[in-house]
Image (cartoon, rainbow, N blue to C red; front, side, top):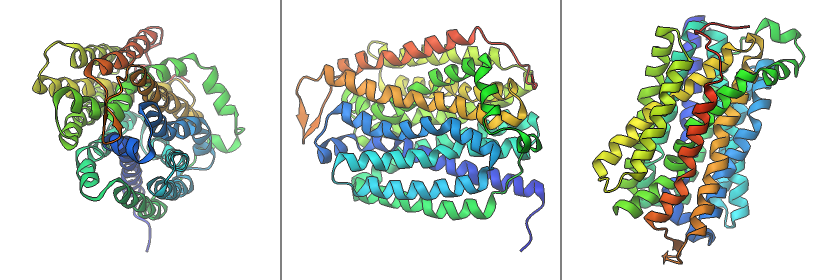
Length: 413
């Protein structure tokens, strides 16, 4: 059977890449709905569970720069297909491990595999679509990820409650094998001509020397921290402790942050392209994200309804993170776009690797010894103190962006 016309092929490749990013987010947030189960089965506390979840981010973040360089050199088809197979293997190891060390390795392999999803899909966009559509399609890719985040909360929590976390995560692992086949069938490569003659590390060296890359990377990291540390892990047990909800209802509450991201990412991408500005939109988003997170966690007497609204609005503002990828790409040569996207994404996902175990450690330091069915229980006050590190990083990242230059949505080099 002949391949579809290039335009249709490009859209199919982007769609399946986005589906891979959807899957990445399901795996990213899955531990948030099984915190107590993991504590009980592995007989560990919050710091270890935070570290267990963060092994995903250690692999994901650590591989982003090599992945970006490989995307420029090899192309996304083979890399993304093999990566999805690795996800399936890691997911099965995680689901069947009886000791925490095996679960660590499983999460690490999953993180390594899904690490190819975001940069791979953005490489497909960069190779097959005009530059003027990059921010918008990046936003829609982020929307797919946020849909995965929502699916990985309340629906996955219901499955875990009904079938247990091991059986549920085995099914999630099998889905990666199907996805690997689909990616191999659909995705095609169109390497940049310039990258064929460039040295393997030449593009990375130019990206690293560009200070704007680092400004945008740090902003992306600051905006993603609340999603990965709060909605991605510690928000569900916090809402259970603070508002007395069950796990599925708490998951539905924190998933509103993902819904806000899903709405905001394509909307802000479109707005930025429309007005021809990156920096001003990102600064406004940074301020809004910090303020709404502080209100959601620290307003006295906040009821559940306003909490939900604040989490959703926070997600909308924080999704301005997607513009850091567009800005970093515009500040670097097209032949090095994969390396630029990889470096930014390393910082973005690095926020999870940093904050998930750090929040868990801060919770353990304030633990009063309370246990329920073998799982540690933390007070609302303990969560409030532990979460203070998140908006602090958000404020610093937004302030750093003040030193960056506006691209006016045009390639600068």
